Length: 382
Image (cartoon, rainbow, N blue to C red; front, side):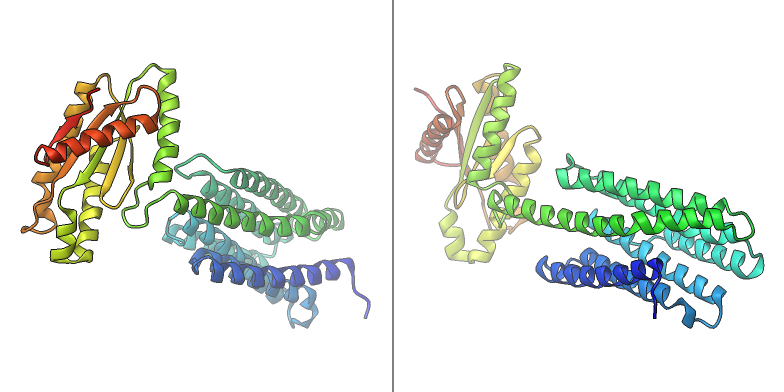
């Protein structure tokens, strides 16, 4: 049996899709079984099915039935791809509007295939829809609440180029008019089968690149984050505090460091258990984080020790801020357990030379607060 070029492209698409399905299933298993990764695995599974149906289209008893079924599967791949990126961005994968849109597209294909035959219109909906969906995917990647990473920027560019190819393909299909036009049909086929395989593979590879980038950034974040409280750990605190100090030094803003150590924390663990002790640490972390607004940097630098770097005009302002934190910590401790009396000893120092030196000074002031009766603030004095 002699295979046409189109058959060869469809067979290639099948094997590429099967391999990508396996790759995304492995990624799903590795990446804590994220549902959106499974969505992309399903996308390639249906793409593989589409390749088989395109290659075996002669097996359909009715050409129109083949067209409607294949377009339905193409729409399914579009739904799954978009749903995956919406889930990655923390949004609902499906909405009533999106579902209604895809149903309307498929019904339009059915209408211009069976009820009002029109060659251009029955062929235009899927590539035009593909262009729109790919642009929506690029938008979902773009609308994150942080600076875009290089992998995301690269993926957006590729997705937009793919949308352009899809839109061009649809326009060529529509140019046929109501009846088959060999000239425009050939141009449509060339646009599809020259560019689509490369873009189809590229989209999968760039999506995988985004997954790898996500995993790498997650590991970097875990390396500087305290697992219990979600605050920066000692390493992360020093890294981000140094960056903040450099930024503020350019504007001439003074900085102070506040060190806090919970009073009698060992007694809480001994009397109530480590679970309650962990709850206390989480409560204190959340409360202080809510009170220390950006650009302040806060971290858990030891077992029950916390530190913060804040921009202030002078040491008196820094002391007042620490006194407010100390007061709130004591007054709101009943939120965890009415029988608990949580308090902390605070030390304050201005950052003159470097962060490390200021932390040592604030530590000395904090220990002075403990010697002076705890639940208080002391300022470092030379």
